[in-house]
Length: 505
Image 1 (cartoon, rainbow, N blue to C red):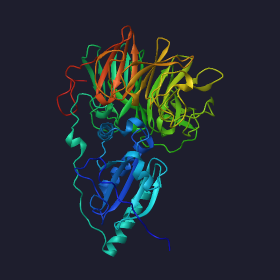
Image 2: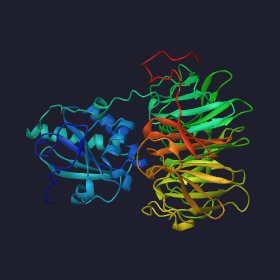
Image 3: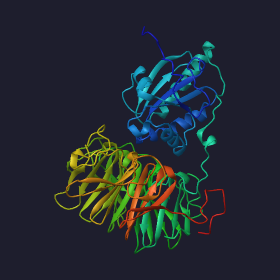
Image 4: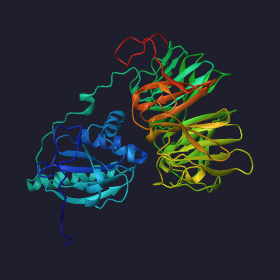
């Protein structure tokens, strides 16, 4: 008979979030406990959050989920940064900040995300790693409840939580804006935390609110449509169409500004678990967390963060398919079919080449559009743990989870997200220099490096201005590219959903 393993006790002197006091496994006896080992940069960790929410709601009096945040990047170790991630992803279970990987090591965890399942008597009964485990977990929880009901070792009760969103309600006009797009028609903002799009003039007047502000997947008029954490956008000026990477709906949406209608053009609404290169009709092909999007003629190129690939969509035929990337997670250059990416989260174009912010390897990649179509690493280590903050050239550059990239004035502007900086990269020689931000998380206007940002993740240039989606500051910043002067934009009359009456349209 296999000996039973007692679950190591959780540290009481570490920081706990979403709860008033530390939890011990001893006091949780009688309940099924799932420890979810996660880190907030990891898209696989984000994909399993809806599964955990489903299970928590199904078994409120017998299941406790505890998120164990074991940080990959240095920036993810900050308590305030983890708190912001909890707010951003609407996490409603206790989170233990696992500093120095102590709990990770005690439970012999090897990968994000990993679930440790602990029975009502405090023994580890199994573990699972990766996505798509909801049904397996559901079955196991039900078995444990039945088994311990028979033994009389189950204790049905609800745990009282004090959520971070109760302590710090999101009442800002924008909430965690992921991307921004500057066009001749106006400024488009992916108001990701409010599940909507905002269109404004350049002087801050609101032109359209697109989406109800509640998460969902609904087509229709601007005031009826629903999105779920939308991110990147591309604008077809001639036809007045906005294309949107509707990230957590795993879809691409089309916003018709003339007729004020939103329509889904790719994706089924379900996450694809097929990472092999493939394709098909847009509305019949499941996608996997499209994070950013760019248009070239009648083709959309999509940074498909969830499957670590670059995809393309032919707008005339409606066919969507893999363009580059095998689906593995790493940094491998070469032919499109042999190349490998790691959670590509930003995409821009100069007509000859796509440029990618490859976030999990903290590198900027180039993807050829003309023969020979090759993938190259422009700057960054190309390693999953090769990150830092070093202005250098090529492989000597160190970035930290870069999420945004914009081609303008023959250079690449990079949102070096976890370093809270904006950097300038030469696409030809891979030289990288810090232009904006002092490296601290903050909100300070001013000039050049005498400014501060908080996890900026989107960039868009128009004329002599660069617009920055300063995500954790819930703000859009504008940079004068002649003087490097930074200012924070104000939007007249913009309110959070349900707080004030939105303008018509």
